[in-house]
Image 1 (tube, rainbow, N blue to C red):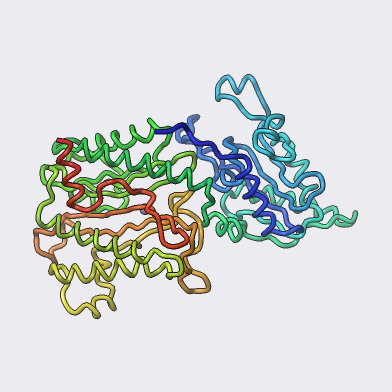
Image 2: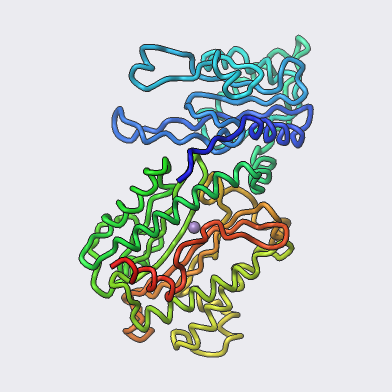
Length: 442
Ligand SMILES: [Mn+2]
């Protein structure tokens, strides 16, 4: 694959300007880094930066705070970060340090994080509105309240404390929902790596292997390209495919099992999310094929509705209609289509929604409904389309031949001005394509 991608400094500056324009001249925006989390005693989980801070700066280190102060004469963008410390850096690797951060991250001012207590009250003073994610990091919430109180305590001296506290997500989530062209380069790369990883798993699968061996194939492909899993990879053979968030991945794969693989790469913060369900033997059984065709048909119908101007809810509705119709035809549901649509019977086999926004977070930010109504699809949005069917192994209400089959097909779709682009194109999807691809590799 091509060289590693680099996010231009101008992209971050443009995003900060857009956010500051929305926040207005009397506002201040406070975005702390994600805290480090202990995994066991003195070892931590791999560090993942807060998505908002990544979006606005690309700054990778913990113990940092970005402060945006629109219209401030002495600089609108201020970053607090850890100071250089050769002794610590020998253990944990290099730090940017306030001296380097100005140039490297395009901020106007950078200060040591230890000076935050001293400097932040002065930045809050005279600002009317504070934009911040309340409740995400309780420890930081308390600090912020403390700084505001310090400004209040000095009101007699003419200090003007902020008096509106607003949810940052209200502005920033909406901004992040629409991917800019630089983000799309990263999302295409994450998608491409994920396609390659899924193809590797399809090639490698053999009855008798364990699920975790396929997981290793997937994640080998991720790491080879400098990516990592965007979420815990799901590799479920047979009835394990019916467990929506199956992550044990430790069972053997049987001769006639389907394998459901839901895995995506995160490339420099940007996620992809793909699901394929393929037969360990290379050939679907008759029942597996019937349900796979049905799910594939549902995905095609959902994709056809993924056009600018359509209500987003129609994408799900299209899948529900297709699946309900097919389940009636195959005899897994009984009765009339109108009735079964009205009582949402297909939820027994399809309990989840047909997709979600995707970006820096695999389940990305952004409202799905506005004022109680489904929002309309617009260019720049990226979402997954992932219909599925899951017949539990103990479901005696259906013929035995259907039991224990779990199928999902998931791709990532970018909405364009006049339609859409499937970012995860290039990977066998239908039963026919999947069998042909697998036949070429055994
Ligand atoms: Mn998904």
